[in-house]
Amino acid sequence: MKICVIGLGFIGLPTALLFASNGHKVVGIDLDKNKVDSLNNGELPFEEPGLSELHSKAKANFIAKTDLEEADVFLIAVQTPLDNLKLADLSYVKSAAKSVSVKLKKCNIVVVESTVPPGTGEMLVPILETSGLKQEDFHLAHCPERAIPGKTIEEMVNNDRIIGGLDDESREIAKKLYSSFSKGKLHLTNLKTAEFVKLMENTYRDVNIALANEFAKIAEENRVDVWEAIELANRHPRVDVMKPGPGVGGHCIAVDPHFLTSSSTRSSLIMGSREINDSMPSYVLRLVKNLLKGEKNVTITIFGVAYKGNVDDTRESPATRFIKLAENDGFEVKVYDPHVKRYEKELLDIEDATAESSAIIIITDHDEFRKIDPKKLTMKNKLVLDTRNIIEQKLWEDAGFKVHLLGKG
Ligand code: SAJ
Image 1 (cartoon, rainbow, N blue to C red):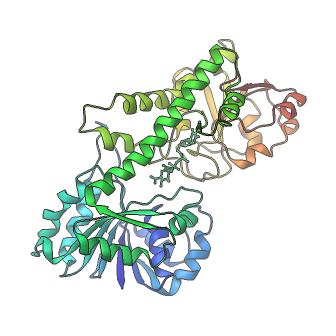
Image 2 (spheres, rainbow, N blue to C red):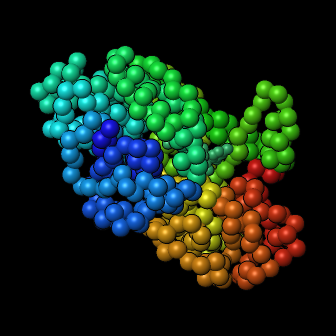
């Protein structure tokens, strides 16, 4: 089949390459001409394990273009950001559907992979009907991805998937399509349920991380080490507490609960959890201020601006909020991140980032941070605050550092 994948981002690109490496002719569409040219020259726009190998394997069947063309399948994988009112900005999805309507032919299928609020699929039908076709002439499905960045390709292939369809035929066609690379079970339902399930999954994770963050704060008040407490609690056969940290980032977990609740009045737990997770950067700053005993106009160093370990993605990263808060408070902030290549602040190497510093704040759990030799760091003041519990405390103490762990009272 010929498939046009609209949006070559973190989800669209690997999905396009998986279809292409499994026998489909794939045209990847993106408005960003530089990205399209780079991809056609073999350069990938982001880090992801296995992506480069997949790109080589898919080469014969994949081309990137800026303009949409006729196809059997139109797969929409464009971004759905939050607007200033914390509502879903569906303009990219609508505009993709509008451009599909110009090329849409009888029996084509439109698949939405972008994460969207419940009801979006049904809202797209009249846009697609501007093609002159009626709803019964084309197919429409929602097949949300479940892959976790850092393991995107492995999970895209192996995870079960939910497929929501406008009707039985849409569901069956989408199921056949995804079976070309998916080894997981494909569960069929209607459009709105599929949209709802995707949002529930990420909201579930957000609420559970909020619980872990609240445990961390209460543990500090009680002079308990929350990390040890969580490890012990998780020995219970029905308890699985997540990890506390400096807040929740990325384009999914911090965003999707808003999509789920924006039209509801029953969301105090979900929105309360969002508030807890969003407040973690200010909580961490308060810890820093206490540790520095009110000293102002000092330099502090952030280790990690990616939203989580071992990725180069900084979208909604808690580090960004933390840095802004710290700068507003008078701190000079320097940044070191071995994965991130582009950021709104200058990225320094580890020596330059720490030389004048009075404290290191570990925000991201990159593996590289576990391997640092603290004896090699010459700082103004040897203090480290680990918000992820990733460094070996004794090693750093032996190198003369005062070590503080988030959640350890
Ligand atoms: N985090 C914690 N504590 C934890 C786990 C995560 O503080 O115990 C933080 C991370 O550091 C990060 C944020 O939460 O800042 C989100 O990271 P994540 O690894 O939990 O999730 P994402 O955003 O990378 O991917 C999620 C996944 N959703 C679920 O696991 C339910 C993934 O399967 C989805 O496909 C993805 O969202 C998406 O695209 O929706």
